[in-house]
Length: 175
Image (cartoon, rainbow, N blue to C red; front, side, top):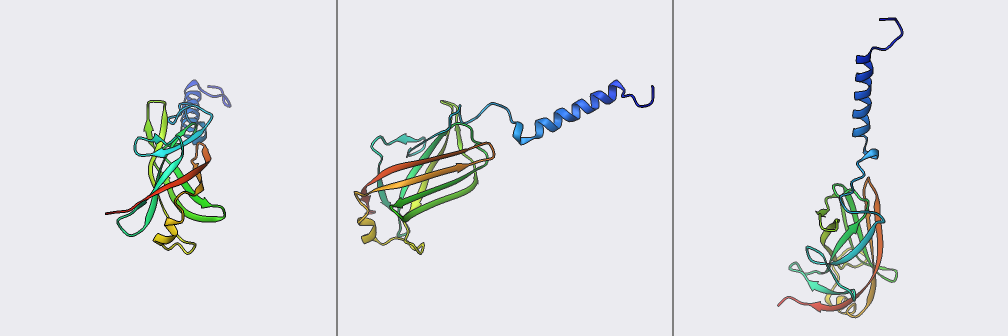
């Protein structure tokens, strides 16, 4: 072998190393997107699997521990990593935060039909400005109001954001 030249075996080793590094790089993931094709869209509803509510009327439920909450499920279609998602949902009445739901580094359920991914039954607990549970009379004053829900999903592969207008249609009390 002539000094300063590369053998075919060395070329093969360097090629394999380069391919392994490229395959391991998270920025060059497969074009297969488990949550469906772009553009990225969000849909909200209830239950698992998600059932859409066309008129966006959501009920307020009384919980077992004395609080009141709204359950919202989220469907995402588009480029997002279902294995590492930060979820932030904020329910607002004008400038007043009514509830916030935050979950970091979570898994979305992958549904092959569609395909799409879902985050089922996020519980948005109604709270006061000091994070204490909202009292019954304050909850009752929300029935019939239209409020804003901001949904923000972030992942290494992409983000999904959406804003929704909900009507708090009724209060369901425990018996």
